[in-house]
Length: 432
Ligand code: SF4
Ligand code: SF4
Image (cartoon, rainbow, N blue to C red):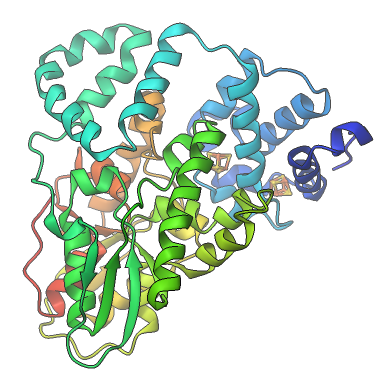
């Protein structure tokens, strides 16, 4: 695609990066076929190609974001299916991240939208605040119908609907410390404790630590780590996201220097996509660029890491039929496609893949709160495809997908690690 940026504009490294991306797009439109919002809404401006044109126009003319571009960029799930499909290697992720930061800087959203976003950014990345908010949400549940009738309050209704009826107790295993591996030492890893997942389902990381230590891997929970920054990054709050990234880079760098790390284990693929991008996000910060690149290189999804180990034979072969839902951040963001299915099959599960597996379930960070109508359409389509597999359980590797699919699916939804842990001698999974 031809671009027309001035040399002054290209002096800004963010613009220069976006220009490089834009030039790769050849307008072929292959990406439209796999874009969930185009498939759902049928509007070219809600397709990757349409959004690329809108972003190009906004950046080239150096103008503030307007209502039209905000509408169509807000509707993008950042699912990155377009990147999997694109034959020209267009890095839509970095382009839309830039557009979102530009929107955040230059567009004055309506008051309620601003308040909702500020509240999400204030609450979700902090486990204590999130836990308190979930307790409060119970009081608000009777008013869901009321909130859903007022367009500006729909996000509040969506949030209350998603809030679970009960909240598990915080896990002591998530506290900073070292969990020694059993038997001969097979490796040493750090684990991301994260934010929302540690509140909604602390058993995911507990199970991961339990399985890894049984396999002889030492697991470090480093002090000082926190939210990966993805939630605010996708809202265009660049500086807040970078502050989270720096905090985590510091925490993991200390662990690397104190005893070495073979990997940084991530059990939520949404976080994994962002941490693997820290090297890019912090490339312009001389104090962090190298450290961030090292952290990104060490970041591994738990299934990616397990697949690299020489696993023993499973203790039991459950034979359960499992529908494997590949989160977008797993298959498109990190290109991890094979490992989770192979691990499940090796552990004795019968793995089925739902139709339209490339399409997002509509969770996408805060998307199911901020774009609840499109999100609900995608969720219903996903659940229908999952139920059609005839499986008796769903496995997936991202807490957002678990919450979203479990909100309407008739079958239980669990993190993949819980099924693997069960097969390798752990407790049967508690169902979501
Ligand atoms: S990230 Fe997903 S929703 Fe956004 S343009 Fe690409 S395919 Fe469409
Ligand atoms: S598939 Fe790639 S090159 Fe083709 S229109 Fe989409 S982004 Fe551009």
